[in-house]
Length: 358
Image 1 (tube, rainbow, N blue to C red):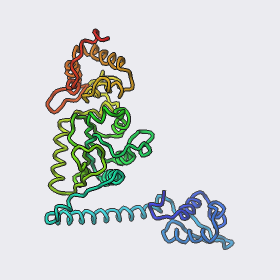
Image 2: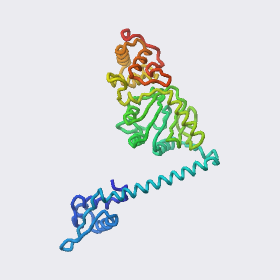
Image 3: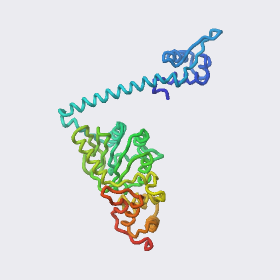
Image 4: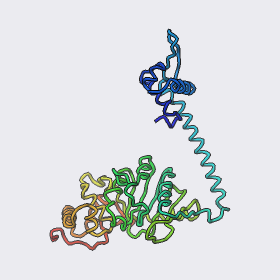
């Protein structure tokens, strides 16, 4: 853990042995399992860092005591933080110079073509790791990464996204209904991401895949409708990048929110929907067919119909449009930008009253 402060494994081992009570070279050798020469070399370097103090006992044997950790490492931490601040200021200075010179730069320098599935995956990871505050994305097929070995076994998410979310980077993602209908991600990695704070929305017929880190760099497919994602365009600060950022915001305003339901948060009044009902309402906003929604929930089509009609009976609705309106009036579903409730905007035709269901 102390490697971040430039302590090598032997220095760390010797310091921790001192913390545990060893005071002589012989005791340190026994505790750390090191030769006398390596122990003395580590002690000398720790003394230079003001992490260890030395004194002579009555019999002339040198004894060592560690400086209290909260005191010993504070100065090292402050020095490292100052170094990071200086580095960040220099990067900001370089970024300002880059933007100032971008006007006269060859337009070909403002975009970069990435080819090959592995290269695209690396670029996606690098773009996410470069974000300081926010990632914006449109998630739709095709997918460059379908390798289950690169997924987090606990969440089903890409490890980089999970790391960045835990680090405090915000994610706003629009999921295309085609991608949701073709997989079982609704309650898997998308639900796990919502639990970590991702702000997710759903939309039909999104025009392209896209990933934007802050307002600094974007990644889009090279082809408008590729059969496989084997090439992408990296867009650097430019008018094109500004257009892509604005384009995302326009689509975001039209998409339907689903994060609260996926994360198990119960919106609206205290007598809100159960987690099962919330997930059902979230699926209804996607426009997927009943059969696909049933698969997403891991239940049979008949069970799905029974749950849907039970929810309609609870809210006194005889059609899905009424279900959406009444759920919205209770605060159970978010409002779309135009004011209509998400659950009432599904593409499937209205169903009959629940009592008439098979």
